[in-house]
Length: 591
Ligand SMILES: [Zn+2]
Image 1 (cartoon, helix red, strand yellow):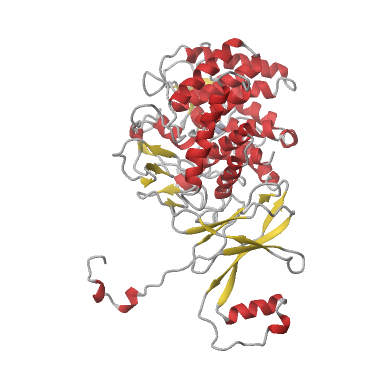
Image 2 (spheres, helix red, strand yellow):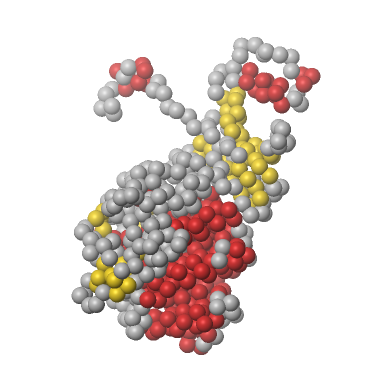
């Protein structure tokens, strides 16, 4: 249509109908009474404020008026309002008033004597063509997400592999697992299926430990009620069974009972990072098991200390260094050893050397890595971005009086005040991008303030290098990076004694829980407008819809606009990495 002279367009075309969207967007699963609270609406002429009302059995209470501000136009023009001042528990709705039609030629009533009456006020407004649009109910309470976290624990149980009484297909995968190198098959039980495809490769499911450990760390009350240790042990016994005498962790079991032996940083590094955390949390309650985990971590650390490079080159990159920082900090806290203290210092220095002046951590000092040929890198980019700030936070928290600690904190402050604060105003949702590109030639990126970035994984990537599998395209939604950065911001806020990073962390959770352009909650069976789940293509009957499962979220198109594609695995498949990050963020924000 762009080639036609504008004057020759038919009248109807020039006045084409564009549907408006006035509904106030809020978190479907509520807000913590003492936490921050946000509402976003599509920008509309004359709309400057929202009101929040508390619903009673009969009618509603007086409302809180919230000013709305232009929130940055990535994803279009939206308005953002902060109603954190509202702290009274209750059930609420948000409303905005907008001009729907031109109004009556004459008033329909006198109005003056009953101006305090809600119905009369509404009639007055309507006579001027103004109507109100309402959100659904949402809850404000001190523990709004506890029931959600209980359901999210149920996801782990339903996904248990082996002879668990809780698994949806129990018992499964209990026989010997064939090895790719022809050595003797052996049973490898335990762990969790990652998604809806029975996969148990370590890079995907090891991350499931993270959410459980965050729950145990930040919400010991809920962890005890849900017996989180039992679930951690079910998962962790699998990982311990994959470690060889050198400390190395194998790739794990992929689709067809395949026991891969591909070298992969994210298996050993993440094993390294989870074991000492588990050992520290349970050294009093479960001393024998904790000691076993600590020994596994020490072997793993020694193995990787002996490796000069990482998976992608002769030097270790930001994901590896961030994870190693986290591991060294936990090992130091477990042992008090000068050796691990020294490792933590060295690794923190290496990590800080990679940080951009604006606070973001690119993968290396030189140009960007090429992600089109490496499944591990795509997973790292889509899932582990938060490990740089999280790893440095762990070191700063473990060694607060170290001579270098002020520099570590300054580095984290650059991340919060530079990178995170910049993007908090680039879009009205406060949602952080997954990557800032260094290479000017990178296609399909947004630019703002001299930065080239994307919120969503590049859509044209191809994944190869999956053991036992043919070349496949691969993509994931943005929930892992969004929730992961949220967890890191909570840690930074705690370290610096600042509220702003935690407030921004809440906005990452809000996005996941429905405050997004799709008004779509990303936890299956909860909230509203879940994307249609992706059906497994490998077997029947399919895996059931598991209530409480974390979904992958919106994918990006060429222009980096979010697309929520129901029935597509990139959006509509539940998956353990985003599930785990979301649980971790929810637990941290509820502590
Ligand atoms: Zn199984």
